Image 1 (spheres, rainbow, N blue to C red):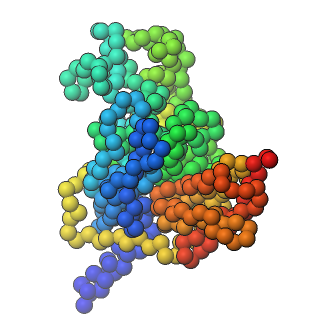
Image 2: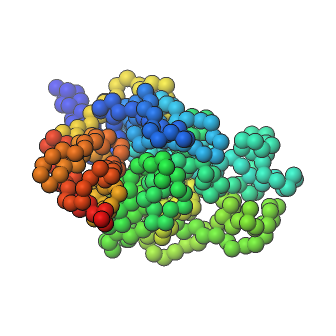
Image 3: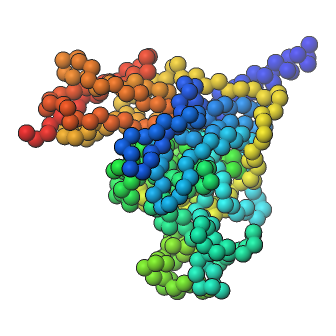
Amino acid sequence: MKKLLSYLLLLMTMSVFAQTNPAITSWMQNTTGVTGSHWVAGNSTPTNDSDLANVQSVDYDTDWVYVSATGIPAYITGPFQDGNPSLATAQNSIFKMPLVPTQNTGTSTDTTPGNIGVFINGVALFDYRDGVAWNDSTNNICGGPGNTPCGPPGTVMDWNRDAIPAEMEGFDCNKAHPAMGNYHHHQNPSAFDMDLIEVSDVCDTYPADGLYVIDINAHSPLIGFAYDGFPIYGAYGYANADGTGGVVRIQSSYELTGASTRTNGPNVSATYFDGYFREDYIFASHSEEYYLDEHNGRFAKTPEYPAGTYAYYATVDANHNSAYPYVVGPTFYGNVTTTTVGSVPGGTTNYVLSTSGYIFNNSTIKTYPNPTAEIITLQINDVSHPDLKVQLVSISGQLISEQTLKKGSTICNFETAALYNGTYFVVVTNGLSKKTFKVLVNKGF
């Protein structure tokens, strides 16, 4: 009898743990069969793919969560206009991640090339690097496609190129690209055209959503987990670690040295500008709690962790352009224990995501511009929403257009070319909850 009671108590404890641990509950599970899609350069219509998007299943035991994902997002990927021949290709990975991550109290572990984390939609996170460095012996860059190797595997170079400025042309609207099919973000995963100042015009021709949209008035959502198991948040958080001080932009403590010369490297120039290499940055401590540590994280209260947690942040500058070291790095805070496994082991519990009770409110959805002349955009700031039906309705109640805002997508647009000047309504519903937004179309004639 005592053994039975102990077993039942264990099951109850695990059930409560699953309902409250964000490492289990935060993943964007695909419950509706949503597939990926991609842009082809020169085509005005995206191509629908057969690979399932987002996360396929989440399983857990007392110590680990097992996240099965294709690595394909629900938002449209591509094109990659720097000659990259790859497309986003299903990776079909199972990530084994710790439920209770731990701080590394010894020598910090460097981030590495390839996956260093996973976003909540199963897409990979890479660090700053792109595999290209400076070879002082040849007085030229090395590594990467089209360049001579820097040396045998494991060769350490003094100056390593920062992928974000160097590969800008090859990023799609979501600020991501594939490496041998492995689609990944190096940086804050919001779309370029959502930044206050756009540094790429790719979204003008090939629009996409990105994972989330920055809201300067709300704590950014939990958007992923690093390979040490600690959570990753978007760009904004509480000013103070105790949750007070309002919501502010969480800032990197790295800054450019401002040097004009580089020892064993090229002098600063228009080609090799300050910030071209990762080593152009130095860490500078700040007293304000909204500045991050050398790992690009801090311990603070968050909406998902009201008692506090160590977390990384996807850092941006005042214009919402990505800021080094971007997400995690150049070292991890915790012990890196995440691995990929071939199958989910026996004895685990499958976490079933329920969206039947999903309620949204006016703070999570907005329409803009308003008034508008060319396009009506609806944007939802909650990346955890289920599939939503979005309708454009005339003032007389006529249904003009209808779209499905798929799980994992945050934006949908209605063209106004066929509309007359006047008042229209954008209606959003998931069958249980409905919100209506009034929009004025004024083309100026």
